[in-house]
Image 1: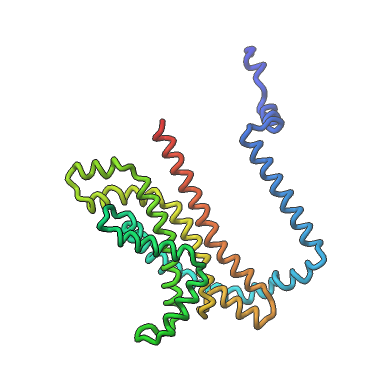
Image 2: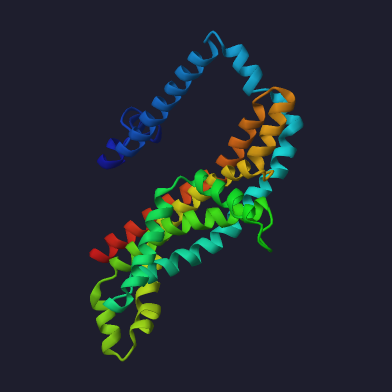
Length: 286
């Protein structure tokens, strides 16, 4: 037997050594996991031992009601999803148009740029719930043909108006992040200003702002609950109706879980996209 084989630690010794001295990454994960478990245990202990826990449990965590009413709230939640999908498509188009109008160069386009700025400032400055009220109740009150009360339609219009202003600023940031040399190179190749914007600037700008756009999508999804104030029977409104009939707030918990089930995966997807972009930028810088 060689000296090397006699001095080499056995498999059990290597495992024991790894347990005593874990690598830095494993140590950090172990500390984070332990601290999280301790925090959750402390919070649960405080909640369960609080004086009003029994009343809160019966009012907000009635599992029998969850079993009975979950399907009702879930069925109404499809209205939120329909509204989100319809508004999302309109917002992406409307926001891009606003961003392009605001970015038009030259004094001749000053009125167009000014109108785009006024629109963006106005709808970014107004609370969403106020816009929903003004659009949902004000426009049908005009009594004009084709403007009859329709909660879903006017909720869609209101959300599109508000979120197009936010998305326009995201697009504009992407357009301004493209180096002017890209546009100059396109013009030197014979492309017009419109062709340069369409084929060179916008493709780069849109790729760069995908994570912020997805963040706005999460905010839009949450704002679909506000349309309940127009009478649209979506998840929040259905929970409100059940709560009024049953004198129990558990349906609101069901609604919260449904929103989280949709928005949390979207948030993690945004984090993944941002991390991927950082890795690409670091790889390109080497």
